[in-house]
Amino acid sequence: MKKIRTRFAPSPTGYLHIGSLRTALFNYLFARQNQGEFMLRIEDTDQQRLVEGAAEALLETLERLGLKPDGKIEHQSKRLPLYQKAADRLVRKGLAYPCFCSSERLEKLRQEQQANKQVPKYDGHCRHLDPEEVAQRLKSVGDKHVIRFKIPANQIIQGQDIVYGKISVKTDDLDDFVLIKTDNFPTYHLANIVDDHLMEISHVIRGEEWLPSFPKHILLYQALEYSLPQFAHLPLLLNADKSKLSKRQGDVAVEDFLTKGYLPEALINYVALLGWNPGTEQELFLLQQLIKQFSLEKINKAGAVFDVNKLNWFNAEYIRLIITESSERYQQLVKQSQAYLPGHEDRADDVLKLFGSRINYLAEISELSKFLFAVPDYPAEMLIFKKSDKQKTDQGINLALGSLAKLNKNDWRLEKLNITLEDIATKHGLTPGDIFWPVRVALSGQEKSPSPSEILETLGKEESLQRIKMAINKLK
Image (cartoon, rainbow, N blue to C red; front, side, top):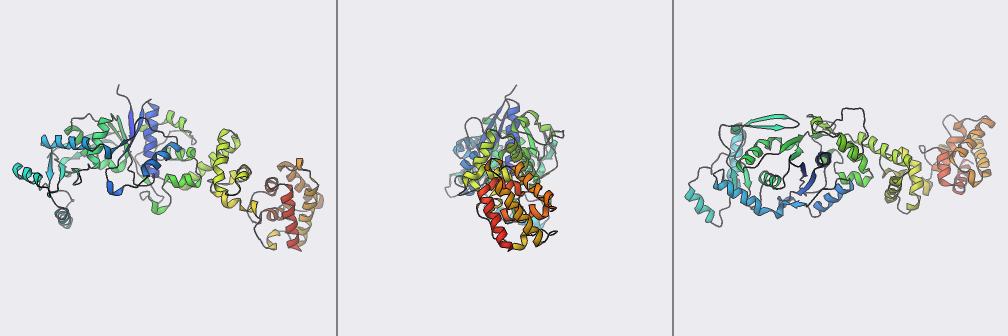
């Protein structure tokens, strides 16, 4: 049985798109599940679109997410002789030919076809040139040309896709596509087929946008006498309005999400469920669990909507789980949180415990925790709860100061602090709004924040009492 080998083949033209991450993930899961290999190939033949450092950043991102590729990383720009050799072979066999058409002629042809309501395609102008003329023009230094594949006439191309099933296309609907460009670099079509063959790729798992190219690729495999791998085309990722997922409607770069403090576990978990369904009610999957349960046959044909609110839910769940388990992973989370607390890195543990159950991603702690390090200015009226009044507020906050001041440092913990404040209300016939509200505002300077007991514990006795005294002065 042929060894399972998949590949992720991105172009280094910038960030890693969420859609590309899903392609990489599905290739990784399928390879690992079958004790196969997951290869990385950098498709850098489009020299004008290359972004310096993008390939290195891409590899770093994959490794941060736990998707480390196997073997040597191939770069297409270093394999040009292989593509030229394949193209030459096709020309010799009469299955490809040099095309000397200028870009101006091709543009004029396209406009005429559109005006006549025809599907724009190459008209085969250079397909039947006299061999002597071709040889002469090839010798001419200034005669630029491309190599085109010769589509056979009147045939039906059939292929099998794991997701979409049987694909059937008439060759008359295809045009003679370019294999080698005027700069001697290959197009995606040729380089892709040659590389997948030489790298012994058993399964090509790629985006749905390549489905229209599938028949062309089948023809190329046949022309080059290569055995055909199995194909699985993944449905598109969509925005909420069902348009194709793009940066215009928000973040789509994996790096942006990681920078904001989305966890690798959450990103992998959520992206795995975009277009794939395990067939159970389970939603939380670690990478190893995904490897066990993943199946190409359970990929949906319909486009999957990328919902950042759902991603937020996954990320919040993982943050809470990690805090609850308090394992080695929690220490990593604390270290990661330090990046969002410049000047207060030593308080990351406290901040995470205080806000961990309230955040969607780690960057949110930066804004939420500001009051811990400097109480913001706030109007005295904010201290008075809407169902209370100045007199009861004044009474409640003064009683709170007195009771809290009597607590020793060993008793300065959440449960004891909460009981202390509750006892004041019971003994003096006050409501929680007369005590808990003004104490919380005094500590945070905000209308919305964690409970007063949580903030008291985090700030410590000295800082807490000082802030309550400041609030009492505001009310005078």
